[in-house]
Image 1: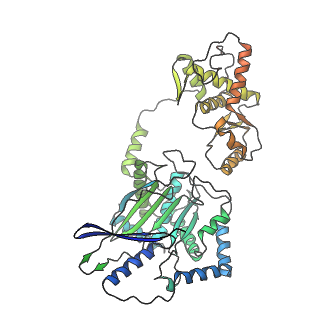
Image 2 (image 1 turned 45 degrees about the vertical axis):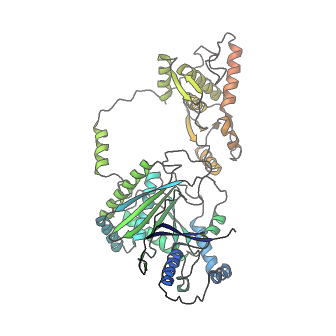
Image 3 (image 1 turned 60 degrees about the horizontal axis):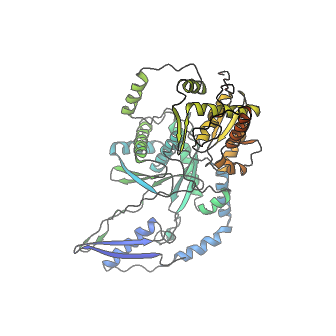
Amino acid sequence: SQAPLLRVQLTKLSDTQHLLLFDMHHIISDGTSMGILIEEVTRLYAGDRLEPVSLHYKDYAVWLAANRYSPTYVQQKEYWLQQLGGELPVLQLPADFARPSIQSFAGSRLEFTINAELTASIKQLAQDTGTTLFMVLLAAYSMFLGKLAGQDEIMVGTPIAGRPHADLSGMLGMFVNTLAIRSMPSADKTFRSYLGEMKQLALTAFEHAEYPFEELVEHVVRHRDVSRNPIFDAMFVLQNMNRSELQMADVDIAPYELENPTSKFDLSLFIHEVGEELHGSLEYATALFEADTISRWKDHFITLLRHTAADPDVTLGKASLLNEQDRMTLQGWMDGPVQKTPNASVHQLFRKQAKATPEAVALVCADTRLTYEELDRLSDRMAAALRLEQIGSDRIVGLMAGRSAHMMIGLLGILKTGAAFLPVDPSYPTERIAYMLEDSKVACLLADAPSAPTHKGLGYGGKTLIIEELLAASAQSAWSHDSHSSDSHDSFDNSVSSDSSDSAAYEPDNE
C-alpha cells in the first residue's frame, strides 16, 4: 500500500568497485523473479533486445481469482483441510530461554558444509529408494526435529516455486506458496519405510500445491497464538534456483552477502548444492536459542544424516544423534562412580536440610529471600490448605505459576500432601492448557496471582486455588492460634514467623 515497491541504488565503493542494491517488496517478487530481473538487466547492459512480454502478472492474478471456483481448487482445499484436521502438533524444541509472549523475529544463522563423501551417500540413498534429494533431507530433518522435541508427530513448512505453467517461468511476481508437511517419525519405523512415507506425502502435497497457504491458515487456525507462527514453527528449504554466473562486458559480477539478523521461524534449515558438496545453514530465533545450542544441533544433524545414509534400515528410535566423541563422553559418565540415591522423597530431604540449617538461605527470587525454616513452614501451610481440599496421595494437582517463590511453595506443598503435581506453563495457549488439565484429570488447579487471569479463559470446570489467598488464609488461622508470634524476617508474607511450632508439618508416606 506504500510506494515504492522497488528501489534500486548504485553505490560507489571505489573507482573500480560498485555495489548495486535491489530492495524489492516480497508482495511483487520471489527468488526466481530476482534471478530473472538481474539476468535481463545484464542482457540490456550488453545491448541485447528482450522479447516482448505477452502476459503480465495481472493476467495471472485474474486467472487465479477466476480459478477459485473451479472443481480443482475445491478439491485441493478439501485435501489440505483433511491433512491438517484435528489438533495440530505444536513443536516443543528444548529452548534455552522462555518463549516471549509475542513472537520475536530476531535471529541469526549458522553456516555449515556437508562434505562430498556424505553428499554422495545421500544422493545414492535417494537413487536406491526412488526418491529425491529433497525427500531424503526433509525426512532426515523432520526425524531430527522429532528426536529433539521427543515428539512422534512433526509439522514442517516448505516453500514451492508455484509456477506450474511454462508461461509463468519468465514472469516477475510473487508465485511462491508454502506447503505444510505433517509426518509421523515414530521410533519403531525404519528410515527406509519413513522415507517411503515422506515420498508419498511430498508427491501428494506437490499435486495440491496451488491452494494458497494464507487461506489454509484462515480455515485451520481457530485461535491464533501470537507467540508462534500459524501451523508450523520449523521450515525446510532446498534452494535450487538458477545460480548461473552473470556476465557483463568489462565487468566482473559477484553476489554480495548481506547480514540479515532475523528468523521468521523457531528453526529453519536451508540447503543448496555447491559442486559436489551440500552447503547448509540453520536460521534460528535468538530469543529462544543460544549459538552454542545450534552448533551442537548442527553436529547432531550431520551425524544423523551419516547414520541413516549408511544404514537406511535402522529404526528411527535407534538412529543416533551422537558422534564417536559424544559416545565416548557419555560412556565416561556411565562408567564413573555411582552415588546411591537416598531412600527419601524430595520434600523429606528438604525438611531434613531445613532442620539442619534453618537459618540458611534456601530461595532467592528478585527481592524475595527465604530461609529453609521459612520455606518449610510456608509449604507446610500450603499442604494443610490442600489437605482441606481433600488432596492426598491419589490425586494430581495442576500447578500454574511463573518463576517465583510462590511456585516453589506451591510445589513443595503439593509434594507434602503426597499428591503429584502437573506443571502448567501459563504462557502456553489456552487450548493447550485446557487439554492438559482435562486429559490428566487434575483434582484442582493451583495458580499464583499473576497467572489467575489466565485460568478464567481456559473453560476449565474444576476448582482453582490461588496460592497467595491460601497463604493469607492460613496466616490468619495461625495468628488466631498464636498471639505471641514474632515478626517476619522479610515482607514476603506476614505469616513467615507466626508459627514456631512444627505441629502443622506433613510427613505423608513415601508411596
